[in-house]
Image (cartoon, rainbow, N blue to C red; front, side, top):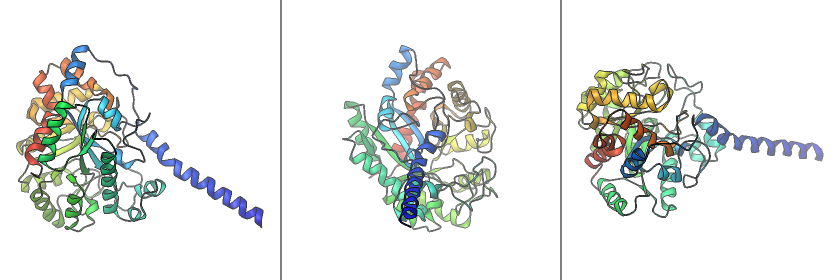
Length: 387
């Protein structure tokens, strides 16, 4: 009996060891870099890139069990690589739920793959059953990283925060501002007052849907793909009263239309493609590009195959050129979807290759500065809460 118990205990220990090692293996498998560093560029591109304020609108690094402050040899971002890539501001999104059998066309919200990941990564027990707690925990992770970063990482909550950061960065360029966002508003759990919980935790950008329809409205990848729900129509004005940017990435076309009809502030699409260069379920039509630009908003061009069809620098630049010609350079930005279970042509240290591509495509230095981050900076200085 004793031997049997010892054997059972050994099997349990082995099973737990395997279970807890799975998240890293999944992270490595899903967040691939198609071309490893180093990333060559001309001297002119390198010099220009070093002078730019670079901003990216979407990164899911907080989902994974990593130390954001330590450089790792897989995935797309960490603080050392972001600083090496000269990134000045990174939007960190929080993933709380993804359906099993995830696909681009049609997903039900009845299942969830994140729960097992959360358990395997030993997140607090409250996160096992609450999507709100998952979002709040990821916020804590970013704030804890900032507190331990010796000033190299700051979480931005207000215009005043951003202005101070920009002033300090003039003296010490190797700093990063982090802005918190949600990948869908299912963490509200159907309760309007949870907007305040997210706001108090530092969230300043909110995606409405992810890969499934939720209480707010329809996803481009959902079953019904509808517009705003009655609850969603309460949520939109409440978000805008609190100066939280609304992100239409992953939104169904009817949801985009409904939000455009009632929005009173600029709208963002944090990570997307455009149908004019790469047709796809969530890639923006010319009409939606023009309507989002008309709000004073911006569109972040992604780097993965679903956004640009061929994940290459040339395809990223092609989508940027198409968008800039249609709606103006001032409405175009970077929206990588780094660490979002995507394969990208480079990690964040390779952003100089986009600068090179924009030079080669004939963009002026002023236009490149706007696209690479100036537009995001300026939008946040206009729209974040004052204090």
